Image 1 (tube, rainbow, N blue to C red):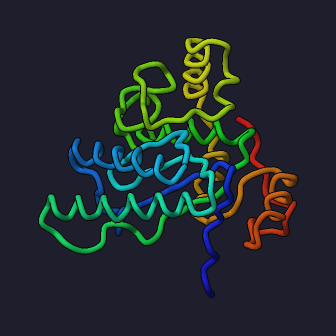
Image 2 (image 1 turned 120 degrees about the vertical axis):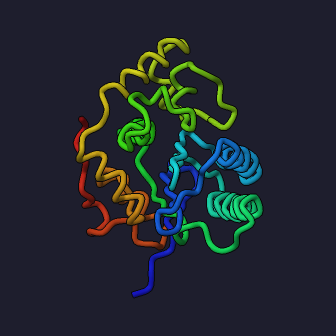
Image 3 (image 1 turned 90 degrees about the vertical axis):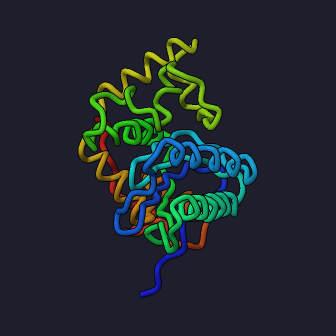
Length: 231
C-alpha cells in the first residue's frame, strides 16, 4: 500500500518528529545540539516557517511550527536534514544515513492542543529521565517561555500571549501548565497523530481542514476524529 503524502497546509500548526536511524544518537556533544539550532534558525527564516517550540533529545527531536507557504516546512526540513548529516558525518569521519526515513508530522488544532503539545515537548527530557525538571534541560524552548533566557529561534504563537498581560504573568502561567502536565491520553494522541500523519482536532476542525487538501486527513470519515479530553 502506497504511503500517504505528508499533510502540510500553510497557516496551520504542525507537530514534527524526526528520529535517528535505528534510534541511534544524532546529538552527542554540545556543538551537535548548537549546530542543529543554528541550522533550524537559518532555514526557518529562509523558508518562512515560525518555530513555536522545540526539544532536541539524543536520538530524536520535536518541533511545533507554522509554515506560511505550502513548501516551507518540507523545504526547511530537507535543508536542515542534509546540512546536519553532512556536518555530523564530516566531524566523525563517517558516511551513511543518519535519519530514520523522512520526518513525521501532522496538523493540530491550535486550541486546545497547541499549549498541550508545548507541554508535551517540554516534558520529553523528564520522561526520558534526563532531568528532574524541564527547566534543567538546556536544549528545549522551555527556558524561553519561563523567562530563563531569550531564544531567537522562537516565534510565540498568539495563544501564548493570551496567558497573561505581562511577560511575568505569561511566564508564570506557562510554568504552571508544565507543572500540571498532560494526561496519558493526550500524550498518546499527540504522539500517534504525528507518527501516523493524521490531523488532531475536533470534528469541525478536521472537516474544514479536509476541504483545504485532497489528502485524507483522518483515519475515520472526515468530521469524526477521536477527541482528546483536557487534563
